[in-house]
Image (cartoon, rainbow, N blue to C red):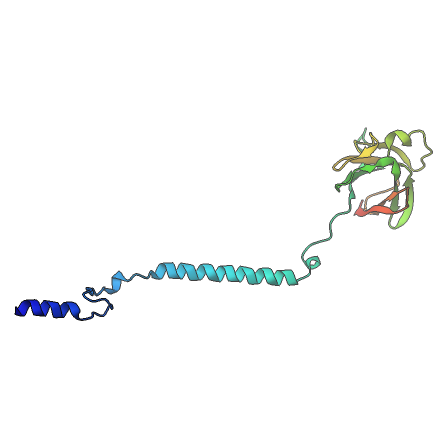
Length: 195
């Protein structure tokens, strides 16, 4: 009888875990339920995310113009040739190649090109439609060529070449072209390069 009384008394006593009769097992230090590696990875991830958010907030406060260069105009000069197409010799041929660098389709007959040499006006091409240039009085320009002047429309990515009078431009001068809408007189594009 002594033994059963002791067993009942042991069942009634509360153990450290809080439930009566629960077994308490002590764990070794190497058997901990927490992972130091996972905790470190979690803290590094949280730190990186917070740093990225702070960086994004700071970048949004800085004006965008300080980080980017101004974009190119919609119509640009891509080349100026000074040599003869037949002989390859230097003749100051003054062939200026223009490219529709934007995303707008232009009616080329509604545009005119004004060329400047070192800031001085040297030539006006009154239409950028190659077929309409032929019968017109055009001083300072011989021909227009290229896909941008063959149809009534100058599509994005297309180029055209204005063959100006020989000697109009020579190496070392600053060449500017203004593309003007003839309907309202507004400058559509202005681009300057060194010849």
